[in-house]
Image 1 (tube, rainbow, N blue to C red):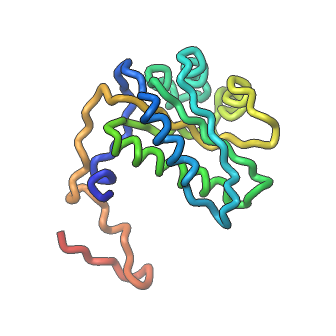
Image 2: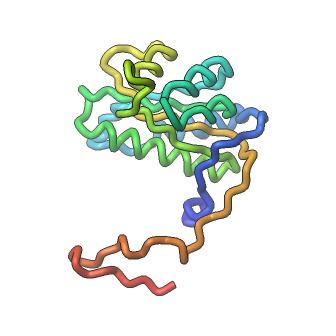
Length: 180
């Protein structure tokens, strides 16, 4: 698993090769196996492979979602906040797990933040996604994960590039020392 974590980078450029049905099935299984607080499973997912839908979703945000139109697959992560108070965390866990499995399958992925983002001055990114996908009232849109075969090669961040100053030991005042 650590090698998958080390290798994973955000990929925003994809080939036109579709994600295979077998890969989609594995990604879907991953989403449904994601742990949730108290096993309440407040999330649901829309798997989008329709080019027209992906193009519409790529315009959901002011900035940072245009590359979705070039992805063969988008996974929209939704949740029912009435079902669980930590739905944001539950959605985040599912989203990162599916990115790790995508990496393990030789696919690239990138998180597109939707929650709390704007489409323009008059509407939110969530409202745009809601409209494109006909999302029922009461559900929130957390993010979209773009998935596909990478058309770009990104090198892993070396261990020497990690900010070990972010690690603390026993109390915040003491830094954790790691021997590399």
